[in-house]
Amino acid sequence: MRLVLQFSSLCAVLAIAPSVLAAPPAIQSLSSATVTHNGRVRIFGTDFGKAPGLVEGASVEIGGVPVATARWEDGAISAYVTRDVPLGDTTLRVVTSEGASAAVPLTIEPLPPADGRVAWRFQVDGMGIQHRSGIGPDGTVIAVDALGFVYALGHDGLLKWIHDGPRRAGHEFGSGSEGPVAVGADGSSYVGIEPLGPDLQLHALAPDGTLKWILNEPWANTVSGPAIGPEGDVYWAVTAPGGGLQRLKPSGELVWSNVGEPPLSGAYYERSHELLFGPSRANGPIDQAYFAATLGDIYNGMPTPPFLYGFSLDGQQRFATYVKSMSGSFSPRGQAAVAPDGRVYLSSWGIPEGWGLHAYEPGGGERVWSYFPEPGNVVSMPEFDADGNLYVMHDGSYLTSLDAEGSLRWEIFMETGSKLGPSLSPDGSTILIDGMDIAPDGELDAYDSATGAPMWKVLFPIENGTYQMPSARARFTVDGTRAYVSTAIGGQPDEDVYGWLYAIEVEEATEPGETDGEGSTTGEPDPGTDTDATGEPGTSTGEPSTSSGEAPTTAPNETATGAETGADEGGDGGSSAGETGAQDDPGAEGCGCRSANPGGAGGLLLALPWLVRARRSRRGR
Image (cartoon, rainbow, N blue to C red):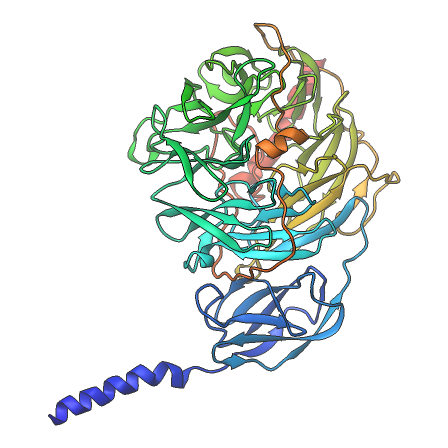
């Protein structure tokens, strides 16, 4: 009996020990005593406990106002100044279920004035944003970073809210690299989140950032999407066992699901790209969805055939066209594109042709024509203007324009080179493309779509001891006056990873010359850029036609692809712990593109453009 009583007493002591030992949080230091009105402040200390979403009662207050948080560890928190925090001298404290820390002083400063074309920039807590941001009907820009934090910012650059994807689903770690943000006409946003584990989730967020619903897909990967269809429903393609192309109501109700034939049993190399919509016939209504995927299991030695899929919006598969290999260094790989005449375009690699850009009929997926550039290394996805002219990159340094029949209009050699491919303004006048010179620094370059002449550039400075590079193609606003560009910073220390979202003014008048500082700009064309049209035009069959189909970056298609996103003010403060690396970049067949890594094998790839430039000079003699 005495042993039983002693055991019972021990159990009681152990039961209360955690609460007895728990202590209120204590702040030891801040990353800075001054932070801008949309800025991030790192809080270091002890006994911060678990993040909001995992426990009750955890928050960070600035001036008594609960603010949004991202990473939350027991000894470090990333907190953000939301737009409802007043400017000036204030205090910050951490609150947990065990009490509140002592308040520490903090000063909130206004956003700095525009620097050349950079209207503002915002620091995300993950190592970059790997997909294009969405833009809402009210101008709100919504982005998801590599750790699964979803950020909503006003046109003025002030932070509205943060949604912590993994922890709102009850997981401590996760990723947000599962596709672009898609948002409906009411401002509700939809984003793919991968918690640490076997599941894949689609999160639906209200305009104020609160969680509406979660769709959980066990053991799945994102193939394409999410995207908003022409009728306002959400489309999302995921791998089996429970996957396929899915159509959901904004309320989360499943309308239909089609696993595809061949079934979407896997998606390798080409994952998480934008799902597009277009007409099944010229001048017809928007009634089809398109995406491409490589199937099979490369890790078990199984074949990996790539297919271009076409589905009607009532769930019927129209075609699955074998397109040979799509792997390569342009990101996202396997990204389809839809021209104004309704034709579907996809770049791929095959023997003996090598890399080429291929046009397919929307009705049955038959190949219409192909363009095989020289040099014939990796070919990007194309962009289209209203006349059907297309703009495409190849070999990492050649920017090319073709007409709707595949004939060459012009081609230039970029001194800097590109990793992501072009983005075209809604009026078809300006091409924005990422640039990387032989030195490990990045830039955003603007070109005239009529001639290929360079217009201006924005230079991204060395930061945190290393370089920053654009991590996703630019997203234009509907009126084309602004573009949002994300950058990733490679080689950062683990304790201080972050990335940036830049708001770039496209139509701002800048003086020629270079301005020092963050996001410096120059209005002078690069004298080393070759603007002569060279190379042989591709072959073409069939006559071009017009249609109500939408080009990937025009204003109508931004809605169809889930580009237009919006949110009202509100808060869903989240938290996160752990780190993830930058986006993966598997090699490519015949790839002659640069690597973003300046060391190791990437150093050799960085030198390749010089060899290409010499080869081009010899051809011109």
